[in-house]
Picture 1: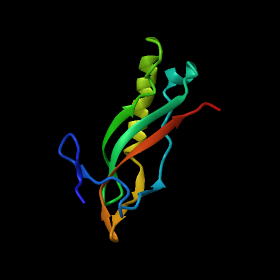
Picture 2: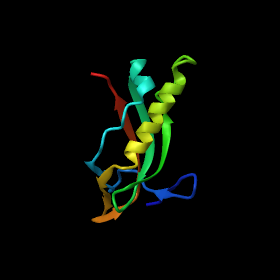
Picture 3: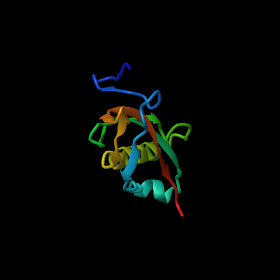
Picture 4: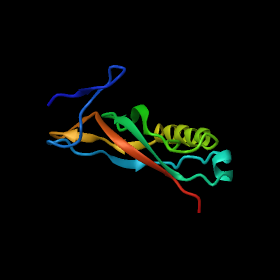
Length: 117
């Protein structure tokens, strides 16, 4: 199997073809930005991240911003929530992906939902 080379030189595999998916062990929720809370902004940020063989995250980038499609007034609040999502996912811990019983780095999309209850 050939690993994917990502911007910055990181290498990781895609799940499938004998590579098991990583499983979340610890996933603290992101904090809500106060401006976004007051604006009652809700939505989903999609992040691309590498899960290392040690079960930590690295090379986190925003694939789909919560701010996409919002008006000019709300866009900065959406981007603030994107940043909160990145901060939270950087603290997540995983049972790493495996190939032939050995931990390997994989690249996955992570959805972070912001909902007010």
